[in-house]
Length: 475
Image (cartoon, rainbow, N blue to C red; front, side):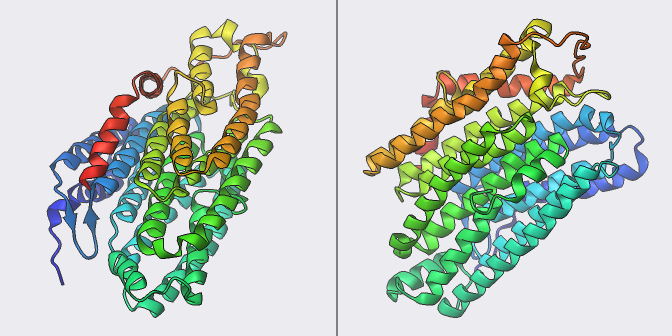
């Protein structure tokens, strides 16, 4: 058995050490903001350590360009979430040091998932991510809807875990190996494209990871969990676990089961269309901005799923570009919700945005940028993300899917721009007190970073596209 060079595990080892250190600091440090600062410093150290890791194709753990891109997304998501959380937890009277440990451990699980060379390692990473996120969803213990969200997430998550374990057992029973590369090679060389056990295994994998990315009809948990969880955790969950799910989804289908593509591609098309349809239509009916963003997150999962259909490098690049851009615009939108949150005001409903352009014009302008980007309006990053996916479909002769996705994007404009209408075309309600904005410097820093990146990726997208394409050709 090939030995594992521990140098490829440096980012993961740094984060694991950081997570345990944060648990110890919780016992001795009274001001929790210092724990957040240590967490942020450790995450930045792990981020820069990525540049020192050389590619490795070990049996159990693989460090590739593909995994590198997703690890960058996970660490950016973690950094921004820490910045969002500092003041928010104080407002919710839930400022506990173990919160940051759970964020770190969940991210470590995601990083193991995308680097797994073995299905058991993939499963262990999945469980570490999931168990940490279940606790985070119910972190505000004195709020009933947060506890309810955690319970729903746990029950549905346990169900999806059982499904993927059954799928893994079928694959192992058919091929005799857990090694991801060897499984694909065995299936190809033995012509098992019509093996009924493998067909069932493919369906089970698709069902399980459709749950992780909140794709229809496995999305039932997402709106309630996203609405009930702390807003900072919702921002974290809507990016990190979703990106990890897509990373494994793409890798398993295109590496392990490419010979069965004629079977699974039809299923993926159906799920993608249903996800875009249900996500967008249900978002139209929401009066809660937080719940609307939950349904829009479901719709975005449908757009990203379309990147699997071409089964090409261009489609995979489209998926990576989309998820990288989505990280900034989605966390940016949630950062505005947190900015409006104070001890006496939640800032989660559409009515809370009435007349915001008159009382807080800069905040309204920032929210407008994020709403435009989520819609896919140029010159924001969201347009580039959708454009890369749609072009991969057109080049693969799936023009009808691209046209359908564009129509769904038009539908999404109604609920995203409704927020803009409330901010700019409605007057503040008479007698309503002027909203006092959250004064957290860390939160404003996170909002500034997401705003700049959303605009920069929309106005100067070629550098991102070229760097992704260059890295992908090296992998």
